[in-house]
Image (cartoon, rainbow, N blue to C red; front, side, top):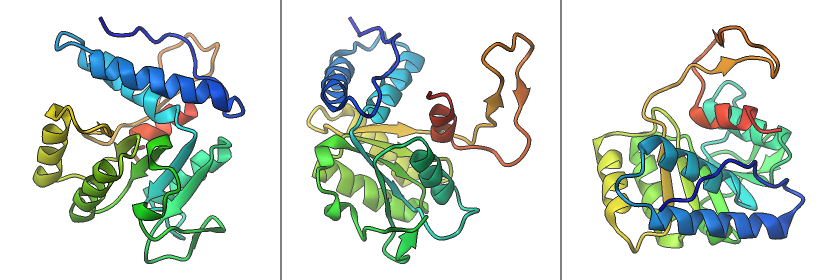
Length: 203
C-alpha cells in the first residue's frame, strides 16, 4: 500500500530530516501498486523532487524572460541550494553555470528542472538516468514524442532509480490568499510551469 503524505516537508536547514524524507519517499514510490491514482503518484514525485538537498536548473540563462531563468530565480528566492546548468552562458542570476550534469557533485541527492528544447531534453534525461539523478522535472514544451517514449520506458524499468515528472501542458497558476474562501482566480500573464506553482505553495 502506498504511503500517504499529508505533512509538509522539513525546512532546508534540517539536512538529516531531508535525507530521511527523500529516502522514504523514494521507497514509497517504488512500492506503489498499479491501483494508485495518478494524482497521488504525481504528488509523491513532487514531494520527492522538493525533498532533495540540492537542485539544478538545466536551461537557466541570463535572459530574465525565459522560464529556465524564472524557475532558477524562484528557487533561489525560496532559499534552495540550486545551481544553473547551461553550456552556452557563463552565469545566471550572478551564479556561474555548470556546463553539464556530469559536473553535479552528488547526483543521487540532486533534483533537476529541465527547461530545454526536446532534442536536448532527451539527452538530459539519458544522462540523468545514467548518473542516478534523484528526480527530474520536465517543464512544459521540453518534450516531443521521443522524450515521452523515453519517459514511458524509464518508468517501466525497475532498474532506473531517477523519478521523472512531466508537466504535460502549461498550467495557468491559481493564486489565492491563505484565508480566502472565494473562488480561485486565474493568474494574469504567461502560463506558469507546474514546478513554479509547487514552489509558490511552499512556506
